[in-house]
Length: 329
Image (cartoon, rainbow, N blue to C red):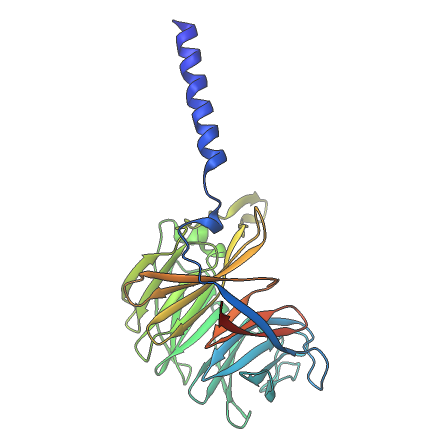
């Protein structure tokens, strides 16, 4: 009898090992890849008059590329071919228009907002002139991500609250907190940063950095939609350490990161990077608002992320951005 039980358990273990061995890697899961050639047509920060000292993140808006440079605390604007157009910020300090850090920025019409996590404030600049216009102070949270949605600023930050988001109007008046997307959210919150993108003037999409979902909220704080991404990764738990000074939550790690998102017309593009079993990066397209998966392209040699804009792909390294043109094979 014991021998039969042992043999049965052994077969279960062996079956599990076989399933583990033949299971598809995360980056192979259900992707419909478009075969495209990627031709390098230019470089930003490589030669010329414009230097990128420590490029942190980049975004597209109205056919222009904006790059956040932590090295000189500025946002640099380029046209779609990589030609330099304008510089915003760049003054280090604590006075009006001065920065201590850049963690995110948002462009909406003629407004540029830069989030400074060290000073807990969001600086406002005129896109056309580069002139400093004022600031929104967020003293109760550390701002990590921002997006302007119509007349409101949505701020994702760390603070003593269960909700993910704080909402302000553009004059700095606080409106509400909202955003519950998972259970035990406060314990997981330190690992719940992500990417925000506007969906017009009344809604926005949130894609977590380490979880395989997208969430759509409106400006009343109502969750209007939720859909899984291809690999449906759950929110990771933060590590917890009890110390004499109190309980400490430590950010989790992940081998898969949603580095950037972009909304164009009715499509959401999610740029997902895998570190294991091999380093690969994909740009996955989903239809909005239902979240139906459409197709993907794979981007080679993208250390810090890639961004799709029309027939261009911009590949970020810490001191340069490569400009690639896509063409069908």
